[in-house]
Image (cartoon, rainbow, N blue to C red; front, side, top):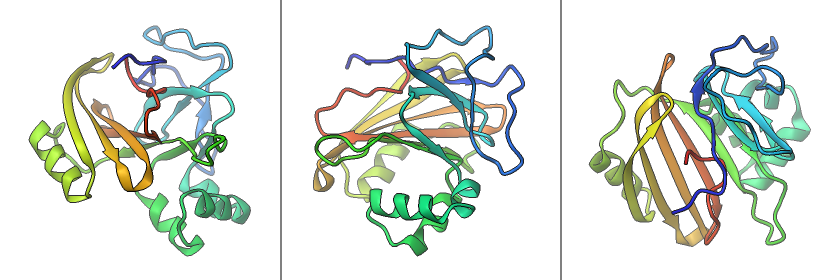
Length: 196
């Protein structure tokens, strides 16, 4: 599957300022020697705990649990976008280092990326991730090996037919540990911010 965009998933090699509230940092001027040039209008984000840098379109919104805790309107927006009760938002974001979402598409769907610092000691095996995803009732699970600027990783694509959506995840090792990056998009969409 051809990737529409290259995501730069590199350990942050330059010092980026992360505000005291723990919000994600967009880096327009600072870049590491391994960072690729971004397409015009794109932004580079870094998950503050996972230390994973990636790129998304400039009109996508990045949030952390700390940011949502300080902004009730943002918590309400996330609850509406992901069709959950507003009281569930803090719990949902507790495990997510950074959540980034698109403006609503014409279909009403909101594409989103989340980065999680996992408790895993090693990158999961293809069979382990397949089993886990199948327990969540996803279909068409297709794991694949990938090479990243950080070294070898595991990728997996899958379908979420009940939501008319598809997903793609990658697992890589960073200095912080094993990190998972997941992208959810409408069925039939070419993945945007994942590694080429």
